[in-house]
Image 1 (spheres, rainbow, N blue to C red):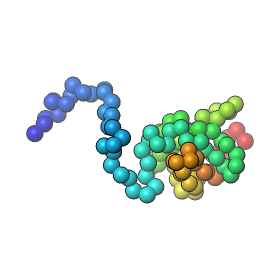
Image 2 (image 1 turned 90 degrees about the vertical axis):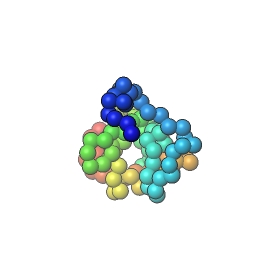
Image 3 (image 1 turned 90 degrees about the horizontal axis):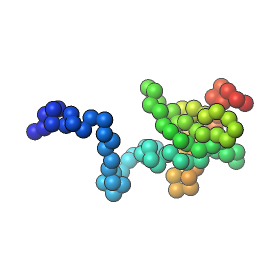
Length: 103
């Protein structure tokens, strides 16, 4: 049995798991490393690329790097994120009114 003091020395380190040791996820669940780098589209319009995932509370927020604009904060909720297609490096979204303050 381990005690908290036995693992205190690892505080501040990152834990990495080999891909072959990752558990299978349920439908609609993804590992962060699968999402970061995907291209985000609204219809045929390329919005940008997911560069980071934030966890502010109720739902994750995907930070989308855009060319010539500020980063877009995209909430990972059903009315906004329509489809995540990892094999094709694509996320389809619908930007609800107020999500993009640079339009």
